[in-house]
Length: 75
Image (tube, rainbow, N blue to C red; front, side, top):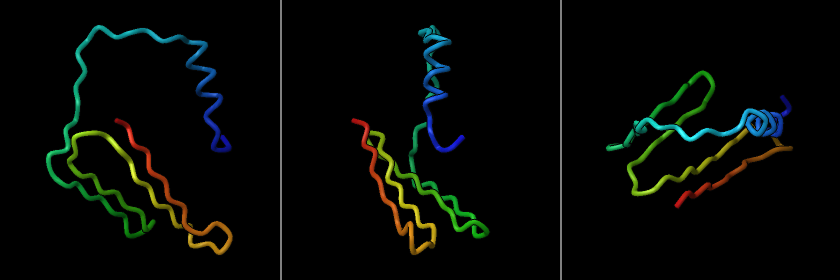
């Protein structure tokens, strides 16, 4: 898919958005959650907080790409 989301965005626009009537179920992080995969050297940590944010660090072990870091903060 080339990493682009435009096909998904177009499909959602074409299908339309309908407001749901059912109550939502939320997962609340009450303590630190850690996952790691030693085979792929990937991992995930989740911490309790009063709002949702994502901090991402990617290291491809490449001289060309280097480390990439991003913060997505949803207040």
